[in-house]
Image (cartoon, rainbow, N blue to C red):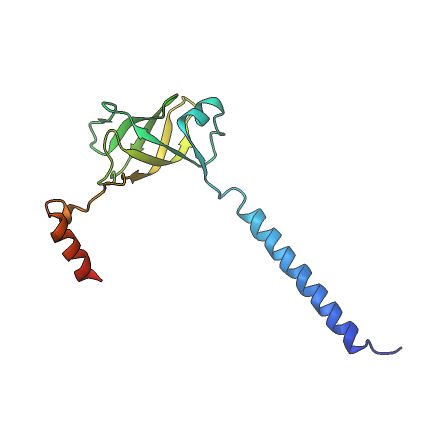
Length: 151
């Protein structure tokens, strides 16, 4: 029996490496299949609600006048809406500083069986006019000078 030529050995090695890479990619994709967090707008969630056990993100505006706090001081209820739908949300924890009525929010969590979205995490969004607290009372010239100092 003759030995395999070096040319064929390299070809076999390359094929095994390619198969191993494809297998690793498929294994990683299979392991992460349920880790993806899908983004819903209130209209999307109302029209086609996700499965109750599926982690998703709900994004929209916090409706004015909708924020209420329970007696425990850490559980809040509010409504996320867009122009067409409203979804009630419950969150237990410390809310971000930028979270307020009329502002944008992304809530991460799961839709409950009663139609209320139970958030595990809140991400408050700011508008394009956002100014850090430290710079709020500065004039435009002072703000530019402060920015130059940090560079």
